[in-house]
Image 1 (cartoon, protein in one colour):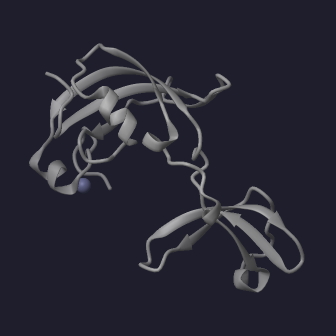
Image 2 (cartoon, protein in one colour):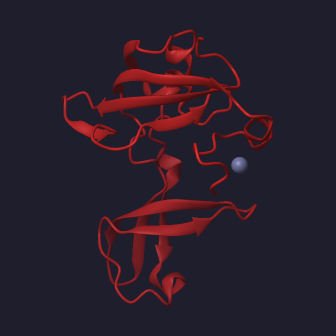
Image 3 (cartoon, rainbow, N blue to C red):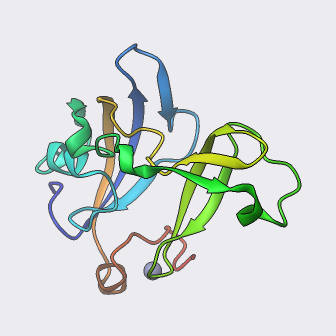
Length: 161
Ligand code: ZN
C-alpha cells in the first residue's frame, strides 16, 4: 500500500531548522497519524510523502511557501493595553488567543510592550523558516468512511476528539 489520498499514515518524524537544531520530533513518543490529502500536515510534506511505502525513510527540505508561509509584516500589530483587560501580567513571548472577524481562533505572540501598548505577531512561529524533515513511514491503512468525512484520522481505539 502506498501513501495516497484517503489513507491514514503513521509516521515518525524529526524536524530541524536551517541551523540543524531539532525543533520538533516524535522520537520516543507515539507515531503521528494523519489523513493524507486533507491538509492535516503542511502542503510540502504531504507532497513529499505521496506515493511512499511502509518502511520508507523520506528526507525533505520544505520552503516557507510550502510550509508555514512567509513572515508577513501585516501580521504584526499594536494593540492598546486596555484591550487586554482581564490578563494580569503580559510578558514578551507570551501567547494570546485571539479571534478573526469570522470568529476563528488564532494565536498571537507578544513581541514588544510598553505602558500603553502591546505589539503582537500573528505569524506562525515557523513562518519564514525552511523546514528539514526526516520521516519514517511506520504504517499505512485505508481510512474509515467516518475519518474521510471528518477530514482527519481517528486513533486506533476509535473516535477520540
Ligand atoms: Zn473525527
